[in-house]
Image 1 (cartoon, one colour):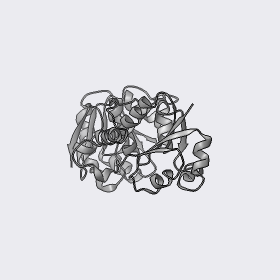
Image 2 (image 1 turned 90 degrees about the vertical axis):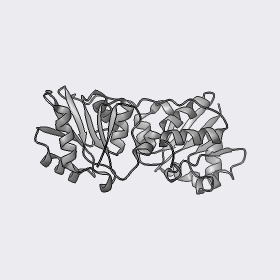
Image 3 (image 1 turned 45 degrees about the horizontal axis):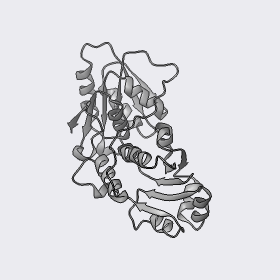
Image 4 (image 1 turned 90 degrees about the horizontal axis):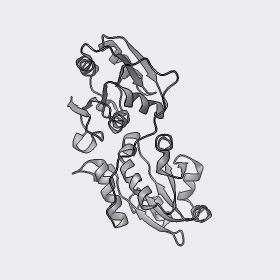
Amino acid sequence: MSATLVYLSGALGDLLLSTPALAAVRHVCAGSTVQLVAPRVLAQLYPQLADTFIDSDSARAAALFGPDAAAMLHAAKVVTAIVFEPPASALARNLRHVPHLVVHAVDATPQQCVAQHYSQFVHARLCAALGGNLPFVIPQPRAVAPQPPPVVPFAVVHPGSGAPRKTAPAHMLATMCHDLHGNQDWQWLIVGGEADGQAVRAFRAAFSRPATVVTNPALPELAWYLRHAQAYVGNDSGVSHLAGIVGAHGAVFFGPTDPQIWCPLGATLSIQHF
């Protein structure tokens, strides 16, 4: 059976907003296997989007940029490559030298998106590259319950983000959490990654209710927390995009970025500005 190679890079939020396009690729390539070269987070969250995954940071992925690409692709029976890169990128140029390989370059760099939601932009660019109308479907991520599961009911706050300029002041996040909590009997979980230490400390200082810190949960576990949370509060971040996809209810704070382009998918999170 022939195979289709798909290459996608980016931060967690960009990757999550690109999953409708990846689902469309899976749909159009129903008669062939799909090999997805991407950050490992997609393999963890979306095993249904490809038959095989190659970590974009691996030596095998690096070979696509060099002279061994042809032998590697022919051995894997790859006849089509869909690369979410500009046509003039190093990867697209190198793959065009592979004999008998059809290359589709999908220029979905965020800087090109100015007038529509980024997920719709990526999907539209894919449709234009492949020459057809493809379904727009938001695939659901894999969710795995942590062991032991938390005491319920609980709510989740992620006080960090990918950049300080995208992080709302801790007192604003704390106020929103208090407003959502009301008289409910919730346990609050503070999700923090490796780079969120300062934001977590600032939030704990501003938040008067008891809270438990959950540090670096596995992404399928994070998806479970968000799906089962009574409420969610966060910034413009990959965690908030995951929250939107799984249908969490709550609020997301936006500062310098445009929420019309970058708001989480779904309709359950309200947009707040700081």
